[in-house]
Length: 363
Ligand SMILES: NC(=O)c1ccc[n+]([C@@H]2O[C@H](COP(=O)([O-])OP(=O)(O)OC[C@H]3O[C@@H](n4cnc5c(N)ncnc54)[C@H](O)[C@@H]3O)[C@@H](O)[C@H]2O)c1
Image (cartoon, rainbow, N blue to C red):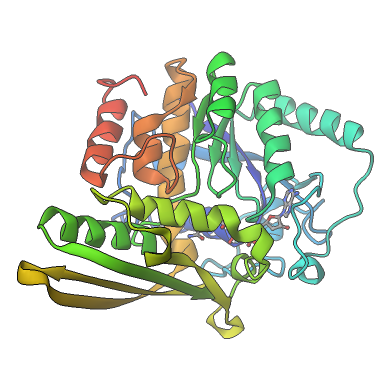
């Protein structure tokens, strides 16, 4: 199979984890690949995913080769030492609304040149590197920057994998643009492998299916990286809360009233670094209205949690490109993302995703 040529937007912790993980498996060829659902997907293996272009705004990342850029602060993933030199040099992206007030002194963004010039340069970079899939890892709240990049995908003929909660795949007007351009879009907002969302929605569904009634539920998340620091800014947070809350609500036969469900990133605790802690509580009743409750604490490396999911999303995007299927790749988006265009239960989503891989389902 041909390689999958990807461009990455936002060389932060998520990408650093994905990229180092690729090298980790390359160095250990006999090792079972854990943290990945499909070793082979439509003929594409892990090692077929290549990064051919990269874009960021950090002064300490722009102009560096990809192997160097992923190690720059405030990134803190350092699982693999002595990464091999990469020929890909990080290029300047427009800052727009990408950098929030809490993280600006950590990211130290470049003062952009004229945006029309940047646009030309970005399009030229995508074309000359034969990039075909754009992988979006911009910070939460980057509405304008994400829309700018979605337009770039459309103009440059790239598929778009939207790993964060600015709604593109799940907004009909954007989905229609990708469908019209016959380009695949996957999104929105990666659902971690064993993350708070998949655990919470699975348990909520379990209660629902077994006849228990949930009265109220919360999910509190804390972490210590720039993603969590950025999300201290309440105005940037709205779409993340919607994405996470709707992902759980969608699994219940009857929606909980808004004041009976609280789900969101809740604080930044610097020494946790990339560890994410989630505290989940469900309260309800069963036979004869007798109450029950349970609590769960999840302790995960947030970046190890997302990489394998994104690798599958990238390969789904390439398969759709190969088959000339444009618009939302619905099954994969429902299984891999928190806020897809169409929500399914997870077993239904998994089947739709696998049927898509097998060519039994168009999207
Ligand atoms: N498990 C997970 O970690 C997970 C799950 C779902 C979604 N996400 C989302 O993925 C995104 C990336 O997470 P992260 O931990 O890598 O964040 P991060 O803060 O480590 O990285 C963000 C990167 O984007 C860059 N950036 C900021 N503005 C930019 C612009 N305009 N153009 C180009 N680059 C710009 C920053 O310099 C930084 O390198 C976040 O939105 C996060 O919420 C993460």
